[in-house]
Amino acid sequence: MDAAATRAPVRVGIWGLFDVEDFGAAAILRVLRHELARRIPGLELRTFSPLGYDHATRWDGGEPSEPFGPWSPERVGELAEALDAVVVAGEVVVDDAGLAPAYGLPPEDLVARAPSRFLVEGLGPELEADCPVAYFAAGLPDPGPHAPRLAAALSPRSIVSVGDEAARDRLAAAGVAAPVEVVPHPAALLPAAIRPDVLDRRLEYLRAMGWYPRGEAVVVVGPAGRVDAAPAVAEGLAPLLADRPGAVVVCAGLAPGDDAFADALARALGDRAHRPGALTLEDVAAALQGSAGVVTSSVAVAAAAAGFERPAILLDLDADPRLEEAAHAADAVVRSARDVAAALEKVAAAGSAGEVAAGLAAPLHAELDRLAAMAVDAGASRGAARGSVAPDADLEELRRRLAALASAHRTRGRLLVAQRWRFADRVRDSEARERRTRDELERRIADLEGERARLEAEVAGKDRELATLLDTRTFRYTAGLRRLWGRLRGAGRR
Image (cartoon, rainbow, N blue to C red; front, side):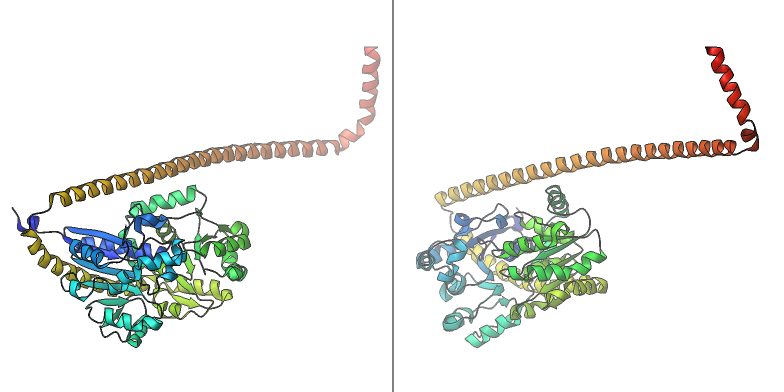
């Protein structure tokens, strides 16, 4: 038997806030799944979040994460035994109680679960000697009183990357001694993680639902919590819409707080706006790919738009330093709503979207290569030890059942997606039939209009001939004879 076929699989856990309503977190997870799978043959990937499948969202693609469970030394030991390496990705929290609103739970429930201990302390130095933990594109708030905690947890780790320079500075100020890399938002690699045919189908679905135009689209997302800014943004878009009479603004809400702004912007724009309903990750990707430009306050959305090589601007109405740091993820940063149209037109004319995409992709691929190498090395080391131990029969049975459930869940998800595709196909076919009927009616109307015009021209010609005849001298001179002839004919009838 081939040695590669008998090699123990590499078991990687991805930990993060993937069970909250957030497009950016979902995009990071999708990219990691795709990029690690293509780098690591035989990869066994498991994802973990604070509540996991007990708090599934529209963004999980039908594959919700497993829950961390309440923190305990026993739970950490179980995870270290089940995994060869761990990647902590996306936002990292240090305050458990602050997570409560995202899950709709009392703060004490999150404090009891202590998800921050999984995301910050990880497995602990002793267990991480065999099962390494890395940070990928981590988003870190100001650590405040938690600075010593971060310094102790992160300093021994060999791979730590964050999303912006400000986060790196905060870690340095907190005393983190580990080398920290800065990488763009991984959403820039989203185009490679979703099949093109899926994107085409999703775009047709959005159009069938009336959420996306068949003509030119400009996608606007955010800023969250700034409903008051919607009229100004609509006014800022007005010159662009005036120059492009067929363009429509797609007002999308992707995270808590986005919807109110999207609703207000759609009201301000009237019939020049489409307001989508609940979108999936594939829907958002399709909308970005099909757009003529993107205006957003989300770094993740800007990075994804750049990945699809679409002109994008970051709208920073509140002088957010995180957006300034993430300027490389977009073509420009705009701080005034009135400058939106001019900025978008400028970046579209520059044609630099391809260069922006390449610049974002290179450091991300380099960091993903490091993560894959770490996981492969750990898997090879631990796999050799696993190979000498007979597998527990009950554990193997549980794994088979879990695999069967996961397969059934994925099948159900595919069936639901297929049903939505069929619906979109039927609506598209119905629209095509309506268009053909409308075109045929328009042709018939045009033919009838042409025939009416011909008859009117013919009648006008006869009228002119009659007028000419009535105006001749012969007709005038014989008027008396015609009247006499008329009286004689009348007398003859009597």
